[in-house]
Figure (cartoon, rainbow, N blue to C red):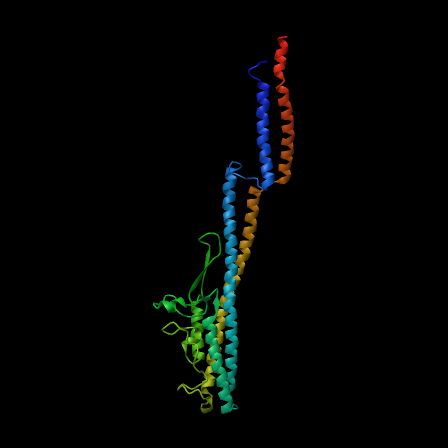
Length: 323
């Protein structure tokens, strides 16, 4: 029907052009941002799934950093304990030499002096090994009623909880208190029983690291080996062997937990990679497909514009009937 009031062909062409223009705009937006989903209107369900996957991936990235920081902390403690083992081994060598009948009184005095110096260094290592400003090997009780002493408790003197995943339930707890307590007792036995060696603190909370005790001395407190027999030195050999074994046991526990954290890191890396790939399949645009769609819509826009121009000339056909 020819009508001056209603141009049906023009309306149809305009509607088609509007749809094509909207589709072309969507294609250009996707190609410019690189995302298939730029608003919830593009894919409501897909956006919800992708958002959850992105949150999981982000949490796992933080958890991966957590595991690396935790491994670094444990390696710091392990390095300190390795030096403790070196000191104890040297002290055992000194005790072995002092126990020999060929050592003179002057020899034993010299041996005692080095032994005393090494016990001081043991105290320094236990008291001052820190990670991020936090002591690691002190055997203070974190629940001590004395707040000063509790504040100086070692991180490893108790349970340590590691956050190894994006969810609140993904944690790993490790306890080193038993092994550290055994080290504390063994080192005390090997150095004359002074608790300061293993990082304990005096009542005022200050470290007692100056005078440690003398395992090579007799039980009356006389530190002059020249006046003593080999009994104390022989006892020290046994005690030092026990201390070395205790330190090795603690290092073994640290190594086992570090290895587990390393496996956690590798697993998180695998999960994160696959989760990111899944997110990309939902969110990312396929440039080849979208480029083809944009080209097709551009051609439809040109054709639609041409047809709209033709429909606008239909009113002149009505006028020709009146001539």
